Length: 194
Image 1 (spheres, rainbow, N blue to C red):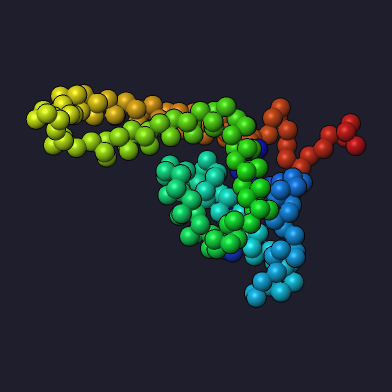
Image 2: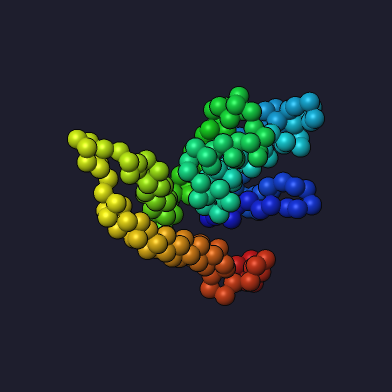
């Protein structure tokens, strides 16, 4: 299911690695020539807007994106900037429907859903540690005890190790899923099936 997009160095674009995704109405709608018309492509046939949208979808939503470990708002801002989408283009209902559909497809796998939840929890740990002020006092006594803070910090390496193990496991599962099953050969149709 995943591995829908691929970066092509020759064009500098994210391109559809699995064009059959256009069978899904939300993605087919992005490729409509009329909505892709712009000053650089008056016919809309180059689908410049659609590929900016696909760039955003891959950067902001795909589990393999370079930004997948960023906090949600940071991931959104980086993907918006890198894709070149305007605020108006981002707010387009056709585009937002495609984003929701891709998110739904990404999260249909339990392992991906679990990984996303764990990353959210880890980001909350980071937020917690950024908010701690060891100098904060109540009634002259420290609110955060140094001993407790050090104990919490000493456990963080195991959280990071477990997150990495989970990420590796999910990536391995996804790679195994994307290979051909049953010894099939790509492009080969047995004569019995003709």
